[in-house]
Image (cartoon, rainbow, N blue to C red; front, side, top):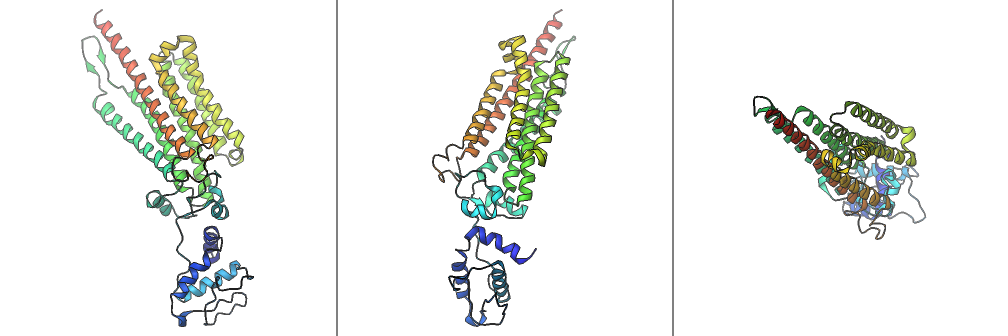
Length: 386
């Protein structure tokens, strides 16, 4: 990669060439005059003389990429700083020039990261300085870690320590959390971890480059699909616990729908069609509601409330829909552009509400398992007295 390609994008985006002169002139003025050179890029002269920095050139002269390349080559030869100290973040106008792929919300006016081109620097931006993606990253990174910890606790406590059957009478045995319960929990918790982890990764790598950003964004979409499928499969299992036929039917429907959705959002051909992508997620969400509607219509709301904690599932849905609505309408930043650049923007509120929604679904799943265990204990007690 040439020097021009390395230097010009950052300079253009950060300073629009208007801040460059002062910075460079300061560096030049701080050096000994005998070490300075004349910048005559148009003539290609490289003889030592006095420095003609961009700020000292004629106002009618427009600095081209060749001018800048020549100037910085001379600065490097003179052991001078090759470029001014660049700020960590840039404004909306500057970001449009160099990191246009990051631009999604015209009401966020500052805090955009430069094109870092390094995974290490992208990771450093998580904790090194504040920008308009900081809390988008942290909300879902912390959420992902939280679900990893919860999954680990369940594996250690429920599967390894307490999943063995406990004898209570000569005729029946009670199980705390069986292997099927751990699998159901694992499916959901892994889905949450995947979705939140992919989201945090995308927001971290969004400033790397256009290519990496687009790839990470596709993974972010795929994570949403994984959460949609992984959150409904355990519900289907417990909603139709004694009805294998309906378990297979609805599980098949949601898995196939998830696969189609993943294909659409991962495909370069289809993912750019915003309406199609939005419709895909809506259809996936609608597919997830079908088994819930089924059990409510055929078994009654009270039964659904006991077996699958439908109240908590509805709460999760409310938080998801509320978050998506806030994100889509871009409140509150659209009312006060520039006031919510770092925190409390619609995207960050959306992320926070997604976390609340996933917690509600986790509570619902725990209640499903508890109800199933309670029913097993009741059957066991009845068998013990017969």
